Image 1 (cartoon, rainbow, N blue to C red):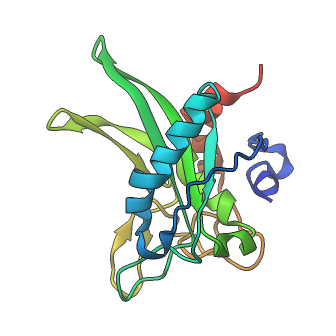
Image 2 (image 1 turned 90 degrees about the horizontal axis):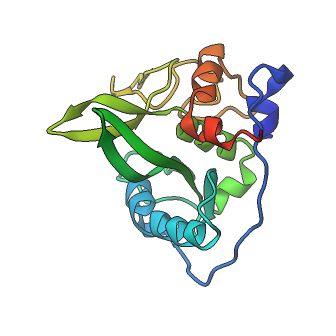
Length: 201
């Protein structure tokens, strides 16, 4: 489904190639974990452990967690997936940031029955960019959707990681039918370091 969306009509040429599944004894129950806490804590730790064991290949690593939803503050929708990046070997060389980038995705039990969740979370990975203006000498990586920001119609809050287009793959709430993807999103995704480094030559 992700390939159908991200490579619809051959416009983008982004294909996700499944790799072997590693079964581990570690259980990450996200029921009481917010998605940020999960991604920065146990999910990141498990991914780093597995990828180092298999030789650190560039790609997007997916962790299947326990629990139907990630924990969330009251009044918000419970997330069923999360996508981000893992940065390693960050350094400044000749005033230019250099680093190794890996994709990281965590999916809850309920995400397995939502056919577009992986494609959406992979979008967060591919649309993450380096903020070239450091704050207090600290560089940040942010998921910025080129068709956003999403403006919450109830609260008025702005969300740069999601699209403001109805029915789009990167909208906060995925539609029940195959979501659309915008040429601006495809163009930016193709520029992702993960995609560029993972191209099979």
